[in-house]
Image (cartoon, rainbow, N blue to C red; front, side, top):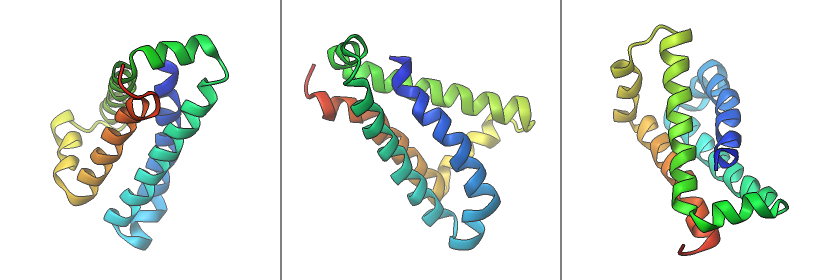
Length: 125
């Protein structure tokens, strides 16, 4: 189940830096968040396609697709919070308040879509 969340976390390292240091300043935060959302969905589809090659992993995700998505989401939020507090010194309330902005809402929608992708991919459990 955790393997489904790894592509999202790895991608976020890159998109977070890209958006913060370059993209948002050039196209605006909402458009930057839409680009990131597309990346999250692409990573989810690629991750699910790759896990199809390993039957044991695919069967575990396929048996509980919603759980796989929720584990991925939990892994993301845990890593995101650890980076914010541990590396950046940002209080959690301040960090998660970003979801109240337009760009944050778009990012949250992308994360929710990533969490639902296994259910859409495998159908009802």
